[in-house]
Length: 155
Image (tube, rainbow, N blue to C red; front, side):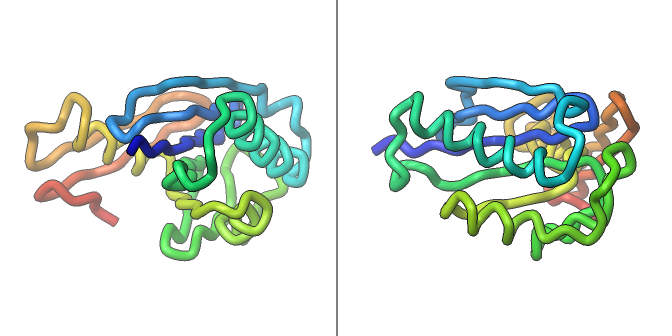
């Protein structure tokens, strides 16, 4: 039985949303300009709307969805899904994004720093998958990085 994941990448420039299979193959993706979404509420609403759009348009039964994985730009308490602040997106301070989205979407949500998730993905399925240790850097609107030590994400 096939299961699916919805991935969300919130950045200062774009909000990217994708449907993936269990092998992390992208089946569908869409993006929106973050600058057009001026407030925290509008960004959260667009995240919810884009996830619902994927579920409806791709006719994915909710029991086939493992959950939502979300990368965000800035310091995060990944266990609580709490965003401390975003360096490049104003209006975000101590936001319990996981809780907000789980209430709206009724699916499990995992939130972490985007650079950490990129590094973890490279270590599991990308360029560093045969490496015990790795350092990954992101260069975009901002600069970020993640570290893998002994095949584990360093926090």
